[in-house]
Length: 227
Image 1 (cartoon, rainbow, N blue to C red):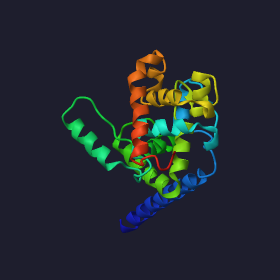
Image 2: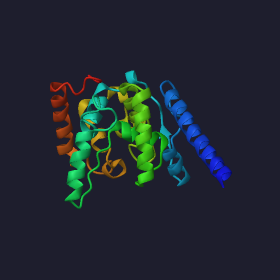
Image 3: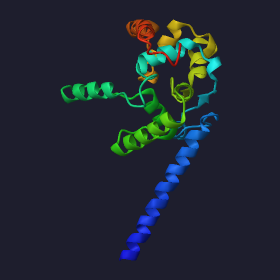
Image 4: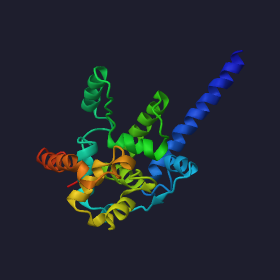
């Protein structure tokens, strides 16, 4: 019996060691290599959805996009270490006394989910997401994390990445997006397949809030990693 336990422990150790090693290699590789495809893209492709994607570097993206996405998705992105503790506390307090669920995912957490994982809400997936979040923050710069995020997230049915979003919705390259266009793209991120089909003015209040928040973030030096 003791021999069997030792074998089981050894196998579990090797599996754990292999997982950690491979995941670290993958994260480090993404410091310079654009992700060829993600699990979410594969899952949706297997369901019959198209894949439109085109990687662009930082200089090929309007600065307004970085500012609008940070203002809309993760105000403290430039300063937290992958997890926004204050946002988590607020979401926890809200969810305890409300039927509507508020999330507190940071851009790094969303990057981890979109880059490595599958669209699920189980505790196991959240634990693995936390692991990859720590890895991304440890091995990559903030600039690289948000660049990965902007290039892999879905901005509509089968539309992946900021370049294809700009081309599909505004018929221009991502580097030529103005503040209002970038804010609209940031505004639809919570549910792009739904919001993208609504009239442009439907999100006018949220777009205004994002644009106003950008000014506030500048004033508080919360956009120090992107100006």
